[in-house]
Image (cartoon, rainbow, N blue to C red; front, side, top):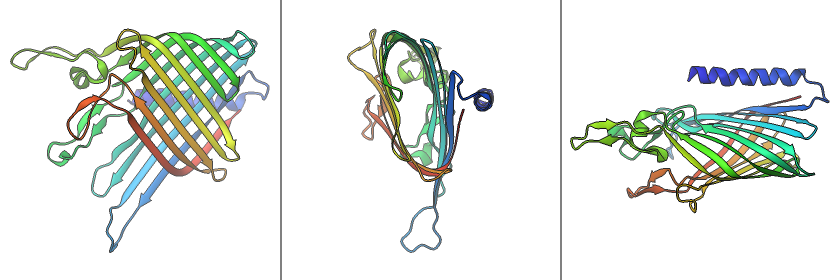
Length: 308
């Protein structure tokens, strides 16, 4: 983990320093922001009751785009991590994201590009399910760094009607799902083949740590200041695996509304919807299967923006 953070930090510092050195007419366009968001509730002798709570979230967003002649190369890195503490509970993770996207395009016409796409998604730390009897048996580990990790590569066409909007479609995309935490791999998490056990319950073969898929991929991106001091960013991704239930389309739709208060203060409102046909979730009645996942965010904090 320390090595990973060191590599990411090195890229961030290098990107910021590079942006500061570029001339205004450079083929490179670099920008980004760092956010520290928080919320806190505290009670003392409060007759109506209540529990103290503290939430801290950090976000880092980085963009590097290169345009020259017919070539266009865009790189987007989004990192997020946060924890929350309520009452006497230990700190629990409430945000964790590593999301990298790189797209290279060669202009085919005024608004169309022959395009190649590379993306990577994962998280920094372990994730747990804090079920009702967590005090007696402890939390259940359900994810970790590179468990899952998603690596996708494909070729297709990109349509860019405006600088702030793009549509990308690829009929040829390979996707690898990594589950490098052996405990989760043995359980068959995120669609990998589970471990094999004999009649006595002794493991005879480890669960597989990689699942490969091949299918069609679609992506829509919109990022624009819709009114003064209010920016809206949305990214919709769809993937259909030709080799396994192609009718069950995986969905990842990430939305973020940024509201600027002044040069350093801002608020964020976020909503993310995810459906992955290979991710089984147990509901409160004990039923297991793929389900629509939803995450919401409302936070206020400090923001620092940079660009060249």
